Image (cartoon, rainbow, N blue to C red; front, side, top):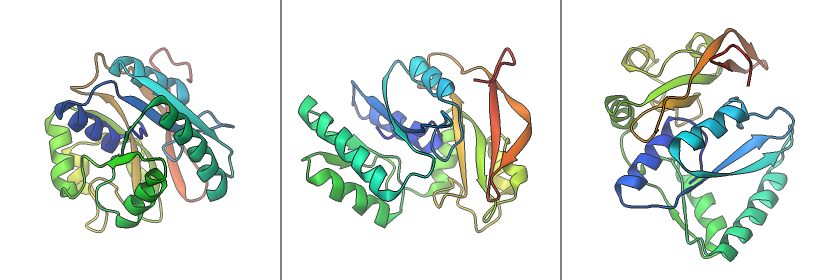
Length: 220
C-alpha cells in the first residue's frame, strides 16, 4: 500500500482490511536530506510510530531533495522488481479520481504483472471525508499549498469545522494537492500517536508546513 501517513492512505488501508486483505506492507517515499515524508513534511520517526501502531511492516524509498521524474521512476522500478521477486501481485493506492495518475500507476505496474488496487476510486470526496471523521479517525493538516488555500489551515485538525471552512473550489480530501495530513488515531491503530504541533509554521514560498514534535517536546 502506497502510504503517505495521511487520511486518504489511512482510509484505503481501512477499506483493504475490511475487504479481507492481510499481510499488508506500507510503502513511503522519504526525503533523504530532511528525513521527512515527501510533500507531507512529517518526520520519519512519526512515520515509524504509525507503522508500529498499525502492526505493519514499512518500506521506505529515499529521494534526493531535487528529485526528478527520472530518479523517482528508476527507484520505483528497482523497488517493484524486488517486490515481483517476492511474489507480490497487488499494489494499492488511495487515489480517488485523478485519471492520469491512475493510468500512470497501472502502466508502470503492468510490466511487472502487478495489479493496481484503488479501494477509494470513484467515491465522492465529501463522502469519504465525512466517513473518515465519522469512523473516529484523527488527523492534522501538515502541509498547505498556498496557491490553493490560506496557510492558516496548516496545523488545523481535519474535522467537520475544517470541512465547513474550506473554500468551495478546494476538494474536501485535498485530492488536487491543496493540502496534506498526518493521521494519529483511528480504528486501525492499536494506540494513539502522541505528538504536539510546533508553535510556528515554516514555508518554502509556496507550501506552508506545520512541524510536529514528540509529546516530550523533543523534535523527532
